[in-house]
Length: 199
Image 1 (cartoon, one colour):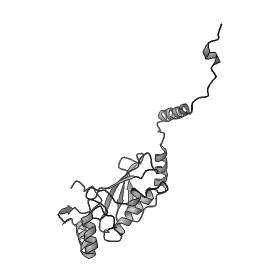
Image 2 (cartoon, one colour; image 1 turned 90 degrees about the horizontal axis):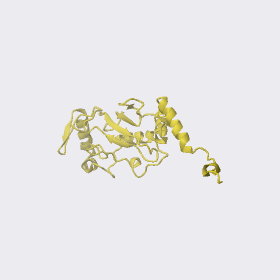
Image 3 (cartoon, one colour; image 1 turned 30 degrees about the vertical axis):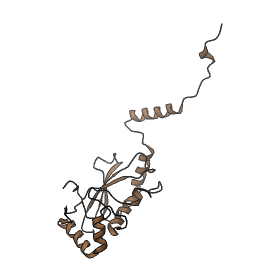
Image 4 (cartoon, one colour; image 1 turned 135 degrees about the horizontal axis):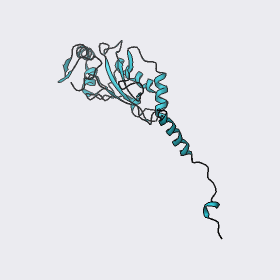
């Protein structure tokens, strides 16, 4: 009589995914959640963050939801020093292999930020590298306010105005930031660090 096949089947060690499932189950039971590598790296970057002067981070949904946060910037020099600007950061699970998604919620007259809040910053696009960090992006944003780049603009009208007459451009920026102003047919509310994209 033949032995049942199951007796001759060699015993296999537990599959590694079972270990992960067990860890997830234990984490769920204890009320914690296993973090993705992207979340772990983002948490590390935020913990080591050294903000520029006039910059601060806010977590509108609570600090435990740190993959989405706000950055408020009030430059202390340059033509944008009279304004306060609000940005949102959304960190993907694939971070740092993919860059954060960043939007400017304060409507402003700037060559490198369009009227929808999209930002032209090379490290948010083709020059992103996993060795860069949230801090790199924040300092890149800060630099855009100190030295707007007219060579690769999103707001072409603003870039042309800055190149043609920097003094007049700076005067328009100041007026728009402090009391609000219409420039080239578009109204820019005072820049007070709030969401003015819908105004």
